[in-house]
Image (tube, rainbow, N blue to C red; front, side, top):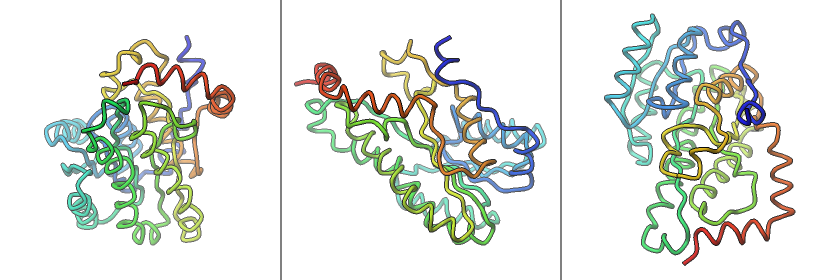
Length: 272
């Protein structure tokens, strides 16, 4: 019930989606599980040719087999996008496969850990920044000239906490998603001048394997991967600059007003 209230359906019209992606090549990162897997199926059904990227070669092969069995065109490339050299390899592979019309930057890493539990874990910061910010920026810069020639589009997946005040426990993740949101917001006007649309999806909690380690989220209202995939498909169709849940502005304002007590409560859970 709460999930329906917070996350009402946002499904794009089937014919409009087919018109937007039919016969087009989509490079989709984070394609092996959750949102990416759901979006791959949706875009394939609408006639897109898919270039799938994720770390798990076995799972990518499963997704590709399922899509091609249904008549879709799909290729895959296994890569750890936290590594700059592998990002560059993905860009070269994309060019070798004819280039992309649409770039969907869905791969991400979430972590919640307090300051005093992080003293010997700087790699948490590196992992979040590398996958959530550096990799999308690298791929965008590498593929932008071809996207401009095609009048293409970019959709980047961010999170609602990019709009919230800084929260204890979420330093690495929140910093990376805020950087992503600001960077794509900054380049959007220049990209638009070259015919490339840039859209950022500020997604709320999504019921994927990424949130499973956090016990507090198991009963929290969450969007389904299928609903999140609908949001991303809608951004491809509309070429809008941003999507966010209807309640985000209200929640962000309330968080700012009640910042001190909220920070106190959050800090209690992550203190020394």
